[in-house]
Length: 260
Image (cartoon, rainbow, N blue to C red; front, side, top):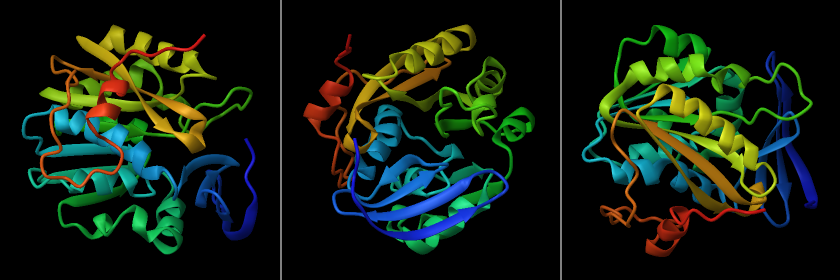
């Protein structure tokens, strides 16, 4: 898939990666890291609602959350929509992502970075999880994919049994951990590998899907817990004005649809 770029809005190379924001005809502004699409204005709401609201709406009264990555602020925005949340810790290794998105994609966070419940840690999530003494009702791993043929990927250590073992210790008894798991059509092995790791660490695991056109259509998500699970039936929106999630897209998410 290719899209026409009208203008390069921003480009900066940090010590970790190259950050770009471009304006396109179809998807609006697009955030790229090392040349890979991370989100677009057109459909970021579908990705972020699927990633965050599926586990959040499945929990009873979540009060605390940990966000791994997510420096663009989209995950943070969705979490902060819940009045029951009392504390959110966001761990992002590259401050450049926050700065670029705050300036050029401010609607992504919707002011969530200024929410008094939020604490931003510019740090390595691998080390943060290892030393974390707090327990969270929701842990969202919004880290970049580990791309084939690219050595030293920034998030490589975040898709390991060691890291998710540390997340297990940081998860509350009734909490849920969720991570994006790449495209189910073109990279089904990504979800399979993540679930294999989850099963070695957590008592309960599962997956679901979401429709994100800029990611190639069908995006996978994996969840894990000490005992909680994602709701199999639409739990209701709890007063949230959701744009993507409906009873129909929730049913599709949990339908178990597979390709190939």
